[in-house]
Length: 481
Ligand code: SF4
Image 1: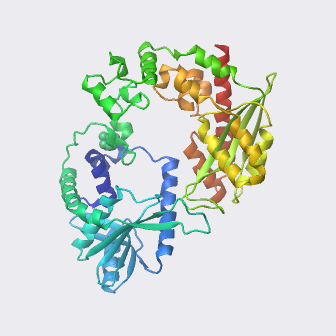
Image 2 (image 1 turned 120 degrees about the vertical axis):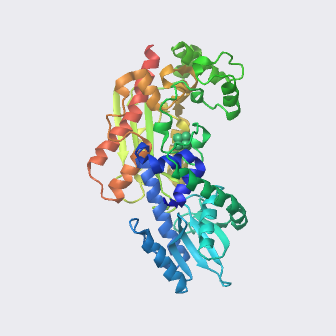
Image 3 (image 1 turned 90 degrees about the vertical axis):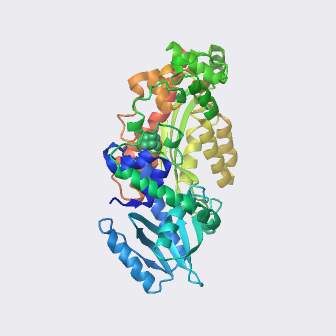
């Protein structure tokens, strides 16, 4: 009989086909990216902090090749009168749960606590706890209380407590009967060699990004209606209801927004949708010297630096290209390479690099504005200079989100999609060692906090430079059309 662990149960709850593939075709799964690995790492850090926070207890060390040992050690701890157990293992009829924290209460019943690296208790934690509570009860323990230990995103490190606990006993107890029924159904389902017939849909990204998308989505046409930006479920349903799964099939655009209609026009014609007047207006507002700016940030669940909140984004790198009033391209950058707070040194370099006049172009400038405003709040003496930088920001993404829509972007305004569609191979990120923001912060953490190789520094510089050079090239493209 195959064992269904809690994580497998949660996969099956999201989509039975996901669980079935995990069991029968694990080779179809997409590899975890650097960002996901970093998320796992953060989860472990929060788990360890939660154990310190709750205090003394018996830790059941898990050896995945010998789960039986963890189960028997848990039983020994229980029989020995343990008051608190970390990573207790409970098994029943082919179902397995490793409970983050279980605590014996005065009346002999148990408090079950799940530790999450989130900033609140969420609905999705309810079935997760209900599954564990069911297995505890099957092992003869009475669960009278359940809760989620999570981060408090208002806490300021190191002065505030980072963790807090939210109770959800009534929801968990109410969910148990359904959870038990579902667990039994899933157990039968995985015994079959027939793959569940389940269409792709909203469940592929909700509540978690499913890692079988490369397989399940492989036959989805590039112009599937889902590429239309901000298409509500209701409108998608209406389009599908009329038999239009591809944008090319849409015959009536009256139910779509202005921007969605523009994308329909570009995708059906195979030619870019161009709003010349809007582009001309945007270009004529650009002031020289012109700067192209991009930050890389890291957000730790458990802050590393004084005054930082959980998951606050802290910039550790920027790249800045400058085009002079008479042309000429120059470049400046900053990459923090020590374990202390990157922000003070970064701010000084940023102020020097961006001068005091001219537009500062960014891609999705709201992000750069937010980073700079937070820096201004942190450094009162540099506040005026930083806010002046924020005031000079202009957003090149606006042009490619609304007024120049290339059919090869398929509804995306990401710099990668636009760069590739408009500039071709010179905008290729695949040749770079680091090809995305998640990889960048994971690599930076690796280099600075985990002794990663020195080559990471070059890779980070190349990646961030690419993010500011491409906007320069895209601007030239717009000007020279
Ligand atoms: S990609 Fe979607 S349909 Fe496929 S297994 Fe995952 S959730 Fe299910």
